[in-house]
Length: 389
Image (tube, rainbow, N blue to C red; front, side, top):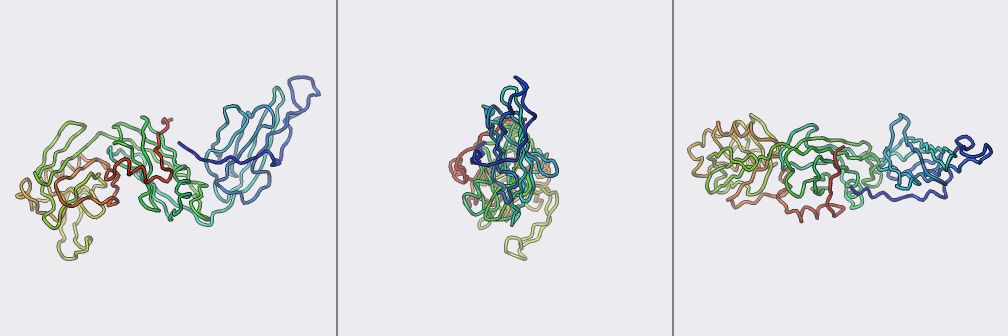
């Protein structure tokens, strides 16, 4: 993925360095090789955490570079193809002390340079969380959600966050990040995830400058597996739900959707969460007292409270008319089967109603076209995942 880290000129900076011991290779009086140069220079204070550490060989090539904090934790970095320069791949922890040790050589002559510096402390710490759950098996429609504890309001801040997100998969995937709000950025593939795909995200947020004085202070990791493709088509006009595993139909269920005035949403949704037993309370929709009903085998489709659930009171309408308050009613046996069959992230498409799904009413990445989704990226470009190592 694009890292977008600017190089820092190091040739004019002086590092604290020591000879590797007089050189070798030729005569015993050969001069030591000139040491590598390091930026930030030794003793530098208040280094911006998003500033890369850059090491350059004064002559010859670098053989080894380490950047470690006081607890011995090493920063990732990359050596240039010609071996003459090295720089960190991601940001550094704010308010930390780092020591750089660089070894180089020119023929048989070896040399070492060191530099110790301290990074700027964060005025505000950018907290974060990830979904789905680590280790979870999910459906083919699930997005990756990065949830942030503070608003990231500038384009530069959003770009810095996106650049920090390293995504690796067992099968190459093309997708993109989309800023749902100033506190949430989601990833979805261009098409649904292929079944069996293993996914690993490393959010290198430590050292990311998301705003004035606002820095990430902790990296996050997430690994999950994409399960079988489950796809359900629910038609409000035929009052029928057809459930597919892969491309094979596995069950047809008579259903009842929202009555006139309480129409269900038309659109492509995902199973957001499951709860075997809850109480449907109209107070949560702004109409307290209209109803308060215990329900079983609930699969949530929207934040606003659309579920597929058991409705023994409407079995007579299921398959022939729409009588619900907006949910998808099914018989207890069908609802229980659907609950057990469904994984979080499974695709559920509703058609035949006059009420269109609103983007953002839950994780709704498939409510937008690929072109529209791509426009929500701060970097404005797709991501092709790296191989899973």
